[in-house]
Image 1 (cartoon, each protein chain N blue to C red):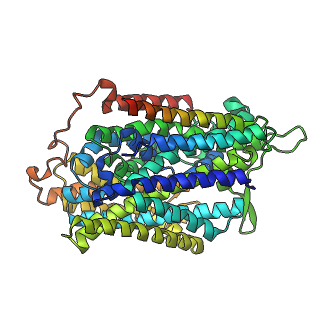
Image 2: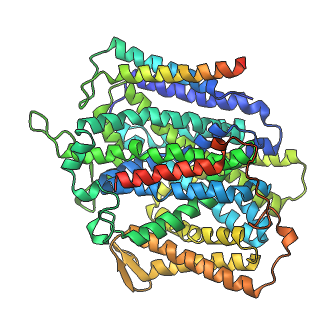
Image 3: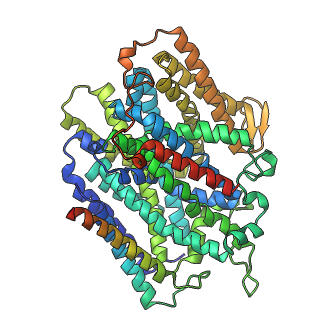
Length: 558
Length: 63
């Protein structure tokens, strides 16, 4: 793929705007709250789009097109099952506690509700995780730009990190959120034409259905038996593992996304943020997954001269040729985009990378400054001190991410291992929050030991089962049809263990007095039901609309 | 407070004008699998979107 001068101009214009937004906002950064929390003052349409964009990193874009080509429309489960229900739950039931408790971060909520050790555990694992996930996505981007455009790996990694640093350092969370909105628009502008062109060329959805095996164009029909669908999962582990444990764990407890909603201007706006964001979110599969599915259909089609319209990209692993699905998105761009639109598409890819990385960096600096530095290193400094620490942490966060990108480049196995470990740590989290928010009897000791034993259960499940040659280091009690099925079951086991242990330990330890938990637990908190608000702006109305829409989508593509 | 609709509107206006210009001055530019002038159409839609955002910002200032 070769870029023309105009494509570089588009890229340059975009970089100019991104830094310009940071520059304009720099004067508003006078307290640590302005810098790290946006002073809780951002309009709801902006927080909603940022809520979605912070999660829409380059890895997500590349990975969704890849999964579309590999698994077909079943990939949409990551949205219609694995995101929307959790997002709705978060807005309706959990946001009142996050926003109403005046906690500045998710770990701080754990401190208020439970105790110091639960917060410490969550803050530390979260801080390490954000740094590595932004490093991994930086690595993925650098590799792709090198592969597709021949750009130098070092140059692309360092330049993109420098731009993210510039605008997050200047304008803090506000700048990150504002840019995420611009990035969201750009991602749509850059990839919607690809979906339309590829789908049209493949003969529309009908043409795609006629050329693909039936289990790639039906999302539910072949879920009864793991051996019949390309993902190798059956309906229970999909709904319980992905749809419940993993997605609720991510969308309801991950500070990276929760932070966007917490920056909203008032409680009602904070609750509506995830709900409004859910609407574009549920239609994203048509932009990010559909091109991958269309690519498979195109690979079955030939032009007048008899040549295939498109060939799925390949790579060589251990001497044999295998499909390289990660290149589907960029190779499709090269086939469908002329100079001009190609620049927009590439800028969209860069934008997605930046929104993902800035999301990680701004969550990292908040958790580090408030939950680690202010809690364990220096407690009672004036606010200006924490503002400086926040800014320094932004620089350090970016540097650590760059370091992580190089670790990923040199030791691929370490990164796989780390992602595995993070999976173990994350899997039980939702259990802790669920009990913490809705059962006032649950205690700090219960929460902590629940988390630790849930994490251990996740590890044990993985170590005693095998899937595609993965896991089973302590023996093999069961063989899963796919690693995805294994992941889902690891999460289910972790969640169940966490809930059981938290409950048992809580019953055996002294409960906290009710008055200490006002605003933190359901039943002890007055949740305002927005009486003064017009009915169509109420969170519950929005939630019903979102759920009806997502049910229709699920049935439509069943 | 900065009204985000202004910079995003300007951004898409500029982007749209650039892409539109390519569509107008190089109308025969095609990628291997496209047979329409996609730059023209996507440029037009980006100009329209940018203009729409700027219009919204204008209206809210007048209020």
